Length: 328
Image 1: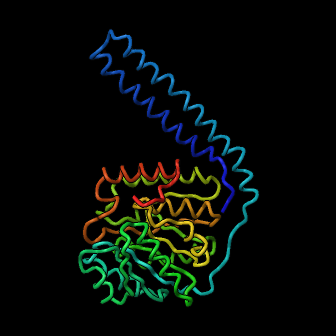
Image 2: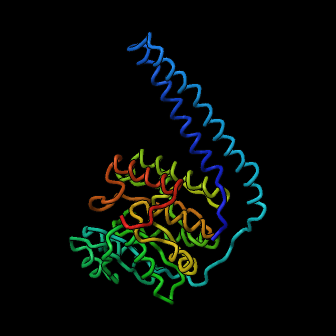
């Protein structure tokens, strides 16, 4: 675990964002104030204060960001070593998570089993009410049910199951809903010599199929949260997508990371996973991946923009204030 440090860029970014909101609120207030209360002194005072005093968090925020960029970041880069550690055994154990994905389970399992680098597929159903686990088993996966309800519990169980096999050194985490495809494994393997964990990034528009669950709001909201987490660990990662499950992990790194993860974290588990991994000293590299429409209905943060917004707020609070690792 790295020694904790004050992330000036993280709090500087937050203050700058607050300043922008205050300023825009002040500007937006000017028109209705002139139309409705043109002679109101108190309305004018509030309007003026919002615009002028937004400069205080702006200056403070930019100053904090400058501390990290011009004082701390150069020191981090001077002590950073280039990583190139090839993996001799490139066979992969794939672990898939699912909840009520009966319509996609079999196709997802068959897709991953068809890849020449995949040794086996482990399928974890999180108390599905349909025939998800049966369909996965019929398609050739080793399927289990995780009794503890929740996304974090399902992912932790999947990663633990992947570590049970000594004939592979790599565990690939994905979902059993056909949003991710096996042919991207080759990309992951090409990036792996540089990292402990390779994370998929869905932010390239040209790699997104039409009609995916990733709306424009989710796309850019996810990008914003990614940069907030990057600011927290400035100089130690470059992030553009904190919401994707698709990851290739060295088993040696997973054994270091898993004891630090709580299965009680919910749908915000993916940025929580990244935050814990970076803080523990693991090297993360992103890889551009394709993204496809899911089969069936979404049950997570991609149901609609309202739910995605609430999930995004939980992610931001986790990054800023710490993650809620207790059972909710």
